[in-house]
Amino acid sequence: MKNRDSNPSKELYRRLRKLSAERLWTEEVPKFNRATQRERVEQVALVRAVSVVLSESGTEGQRRLVRPWLLNLLQDPAEKIRRYAMAALPKFGAGSGEETELLSLLRTTGSDREKKYLARTLEKVGGSATLETLAGGAEGLSRQTEQKIRASVARNQSPSRLCSHRVISQIDGIRIHLRGRRGLENIVRDEIKGSSRSKDKFRIEEVSAGLVALTPLSPFSLNDIYALRCFGTVGFVLATVDASEAAGMAEAVPNAITSPLSRRLLQTFTEGSIRYRLDFVAHGHQRGAIRQMTERAYALCPDILNDPRQAPWVVAVHPGRQGNLVELSPRFSPDPRFSYRQHDVPAASHPQLAASMARIAGPMKGEIIWDPFCGSGLELVERSLLGGVHHVYGTDLSLEAIQIAWDNLRAANIQSLKSTLLCRDFRDLDGVTGLGPNSVTLVITNPPMGKRVPIPDLPGLIKDLFLAAEKVLKPGGRLVFANPLPLVNPARSLKLQSAQVVDFGGFDCQLEKYIKSSR
Image (cartoon, rainbow, N blue to C red):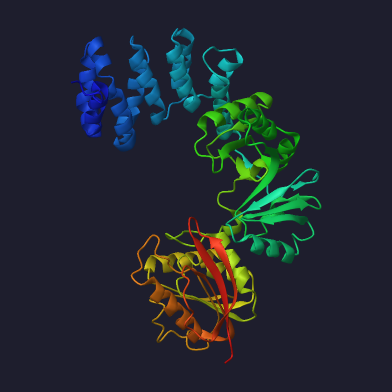
C-alpha cells in the first residue's frame, strides 16, 4: 500500500536541506544545471533548498552568485521552475533588475497561477516600477498586492514617525481607553487624579477590569497621555460594532479605519506615510477577515495603508460588553516612558507594574530603598523617578541582573541618587553598609514566583522576605511586593495596609503594602 505521506519532492527537499551551503552550491547546483528539462522539473526542490540554506548560512560571495542564477531560472520553459525561482528571489535582496524581470514575466505569462505567484513576490520586492505598472491597469495584480507594494515604497521613501508633541485641537467625539493589567485600573485612576498635567485635561468616564476610559476636556498631545506611567496601551475608540453580525463587521471595521475621526487623529499625530496594522484581540487567527477588511479600507482611502511591518499605528478590535470596540493605538518602540530600559532579564517586572508598585509605596522624603530581588532594577528606577529618594540598594543572585540594573539606573539619569547593587542572597546582609536593622524606609520587590525557574521552597522564601523586611525597615517604613501565596505573615510588626489582586499574565497575584509599626 502506498504511503500517503510519501512525496518525492518533499523528500528530496528534506535531503538537500541537510547539506552544507558549499556542497549545495558547488555540487548539486551544477548537476541541476546539466540535467534534462524533465529531470530539472523533477528536482525543482533544489531551488527551494538553495534559497533556504544559502540565505541562512551561505557566504557573501555565494549569495551574490545566487541572484543571477535565479534570474536565469525566470526564463526557464517550465512554469514550475519559474515559480520556485521567483519565490526564492526576495531572500537575496532583489532590486530593480529583478523587479524588471518579474514585471516582464507578468506581461507575457498567460497562467493565472503564475500571476498569483508573481504578485506574491512583487509584494515583497516591488517598487516604483511596479506602481507604474499598476497605474497602467496591469492584470493579475490585486488591490491587496497594490496596497502592500505602496506600503513597502512608503516605508522606504517616506518613513513614518509618531509626533507625540503635536496637539489635537478638535476633540469632539474622542474617547480614550487606557488598557493594562486587570487589577491596576484603580492605580491608573488615582494617577490621573493626582497628576497636575492630566487631571485638568481629561475626565474619567469609566473604570472597569483592566480599563480606564477618558474623554478630553481640552486640546491635548500624546505626551499628555504618556506622562502617565501605570497604564499599558492607549486606544482611541473609533467605533463599537455588533459582534454577532460578521457581515456588519466586514463593513464597519473598514469604515472605522477610514472615518473622519480616524483621519483626524492619524494626520495630527503622524509625520510621513500613514500606515497601520490590524489586530483582533482575543479572537484567534483572523487572516481572511483581516485581508478582506484591509482591502476594503484601502478602497475607501488609499492614503491609509495596511502594513504589518513597522507600522506606527495599530487598529485593534477588542471584545466589549456591548460589542467589539475598534481602537486606534499609537505604537511606540521603545515606549518613551521607559527609554531607560537598556536591557532586561527573564521574568523581570513589566515597567507599568513597576510604576504601579512605586505609586502604591507612596512618597517619603529622604527615602532609602531596598529591592531584595532587583532583577533589571525597574522598581528602583520607577520609585526614584517619583522623587525624594536618597539611596537605593539592590540585591540579586544573578551577576548579569546586577549589571543590567546598573545600566538601567545610569540610563534613567536620576540626579543625586546614590546606588548600591550587590550580587548576593537577600538573606545575607552582614557587612553591607547601609542595610542594617532599622535602616530602610521602603522595601519594594517583585520576587521570583516559580513559574519559569522552579523554587524549591517558595513559601519559605516569601516568609524569609517578610522577616528580612521587618528587620531592615525603620518604624513607619513600608513593604510593597507581589505576593504569589496566601500565607500567614510571620513578621508581627508588619501590618497589612492594602492588597489588590492583579493579573500577572495567566495567574493572579496580590500586590500588598505593609507598614512597620513602632511596637
